[in-house]
Image (tube, rainbow, N blue to C red; front, side, top):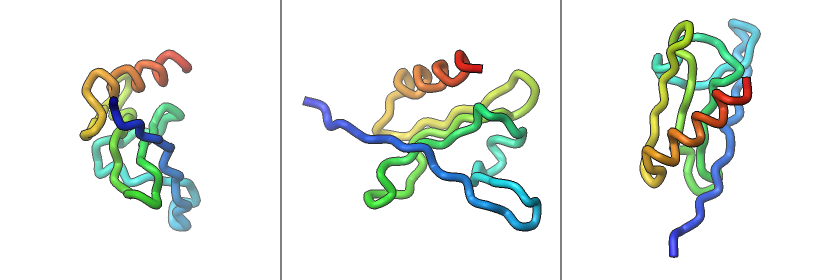
Length: 85
């Protein structure tokens, strides 16, 4: 039987310099969008980003997926976000 993993959205942090909320996308996501997100396991277990999805430029998005998620699972999660907006 497979191990279940609970994924949660990483909370953005407030940046006093820009007076806005920001997330650490490491230059992979450079455009603001309500579709940008990162999924992590329970922070008490690990702070490692397992999936990040975000806008690079107009109509171009990046997705980064890490084990234990499969490419299929990550792509399916990303499609649900694209379908919402």
